[in-house]
Image (cartoon, rainbow, N blue to C red; front, top):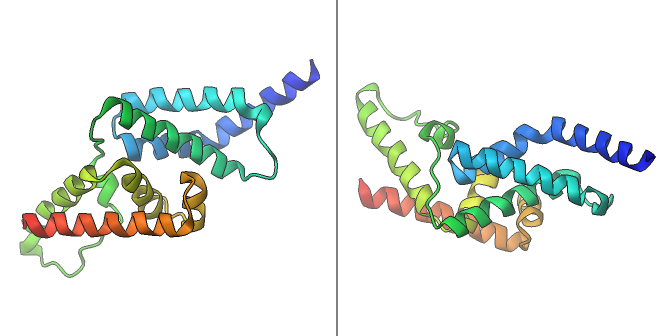
Length: 172
């Protein structure tokens, strides 16, 4: 069957090229390595079975992201758990340049509070925040991935940032 060989070759290339992106996307939302590995496997099974239905006019990256995000959100909703990610992963890009060396303990406290605040966000806000902040996706791409309007993506991000700020201020 020539078609199945082509499908297998396409799948192998997609798997090789996008495994780490899918894994990291899921991990930033779920935060548990074991669950992330299981979900990543489920996502690639879904991709393999749905590859025949993939419309070429759609962006492959957006399609993969949407599947990974949906599996992550479904997992969080089913298990009713707050996701956890390492503080380093969440806050690595955040810079505290204005802090003095003697404020190191204060810096660690702020990082912990930001980490806690992110974990209090509703799943959709958390996903949008992660896609924008960690993955640095433009709002247009986030809207496609999350099946939101661009305004909806911006609103979710804005509310997430506001909630994170209020949480941190309230705990300091």
